[in-house]
Image (tube, rainbow over all chains, first blue to last red; front, top):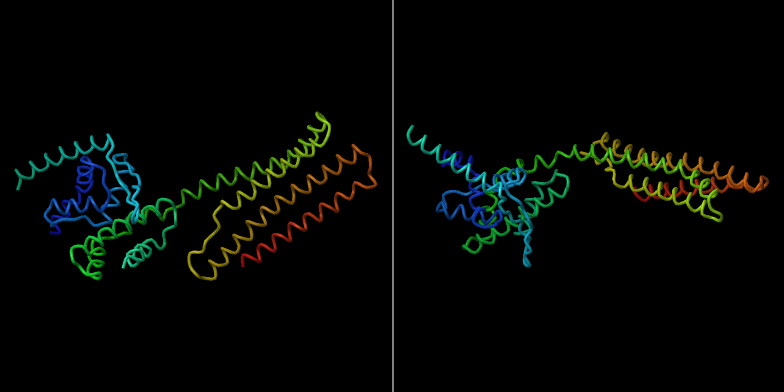
Length: 106
Length: 216
């Protein structure tokens, strides 16, 4: 699993952007969705997830705002920007190309 | 157990300065971890297992906290700002007698004196504001050298502002003395201004000493 994790980690940002394409979300919800989609086989470390948020926000691909939860702690929500959507499409194309190449090589 | 999660984050952020960015990150991490913890409880885990499950997937937080420790850039900015504030304050002190002379020439009545005191008040306010926003040296560990540095920083900052204030103050006193003496020609009594000025300086000094003792 550790080799797989290493490969997946390179795509953390694309995975986050994909999730945000559908709707605004916050850290735990994104990680939970990743876990469910991969049938509990994969989840991000918190440190990886939140440093990816920071990089994406700095690059202008996502923006953040605080939720107004009445009960419990506030959540920090992220939403994808127009630039983020463009970057996601590019990353996805890059991955599809890489996948084809690797398939023909291995 | 929720307190343990909070504590866990506190420890990870122990040597990170409490800036807006770091406090927000702390809040974000904590709220997400608590939600995760509660979900584990719902799934039937006991508190201990839920907590260790949450912590297991935290990973290496130092990659998040490391960039937050770098506050050098903020410091350079605030130094520039502080220099500007000091320069403006000194300028106001120097210009205050000019205001007195100019306004007295143009208008009759106490407008000249009033405008001078407004200048002085503004300048003093700037100095006080400046010394309250500049970050004082906080010691990095409990060694004697660090304690000395902190003490030195505190003393020099107070005495620096005070020296500025004092020199401007005497300058204004002399200007005031000459001005009043020349306009009223009551030289026999105007020297009392110097006694009053000395008294004021001593009172200010006394207040500063008292405040310093309080801080200790």
